[in-house]
Length: 257
Image (cartoon, rainbow, N blue to C red; front, top):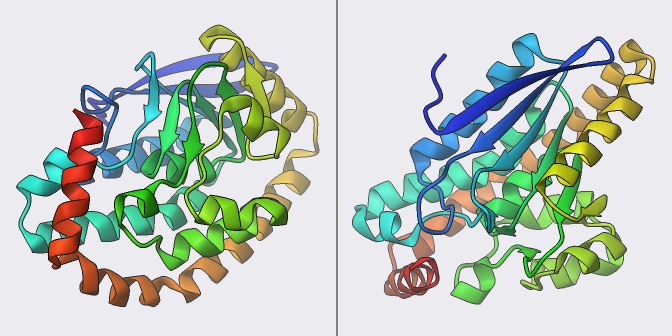
């Protein structure tokens, strides 16, 4: 299959095949539209067919992923905006369903949709620098979806949950100290090498036992997230078609320009 915005490289390591996927997102700030989001999910799923694990990173020197693109959303009809926002919320669940272990190698800002993508990974490593990780929707006047709120409660340490939900963003070292990411790396090469070492540790486990344990963990997580999915469909009906949402999109466009 062809994924024009996802470059793929295969590494053979300890008799295992690892795919390194590099995202080429929308300029200038590494943002997403609905089609790119679908392409990314499809590329990860396709990689599981012939690989034992994946590492996801970005080609951008400053941004891992900066969420949905404000200009794109402003150019859409209200119905198209609804579909795009709904797809981003569903993606929080879909990234949890990738059948093989994968690591988010966060080489820059991971905000809003970028945090959604990284939260789906089994492990997260982040490059040193003046970058941040966080769910910034609330700062832009967009209510945080129930799926995100529950996902944060299930995935991140309890002392941090309220701060993350209320739009606190963390620099790499802060994110590591608080358990949001699993390590901080000095540059892109170190980011990939640390990710590979983590996969080496997973490969030393009994593969059948690990696979069954991971599948059970992910199934329990997804089942809980799906229980609140309808709440978000109702909520986004209220704000996607509102003037307040239009104003929020203008803020996003300003940040992305």
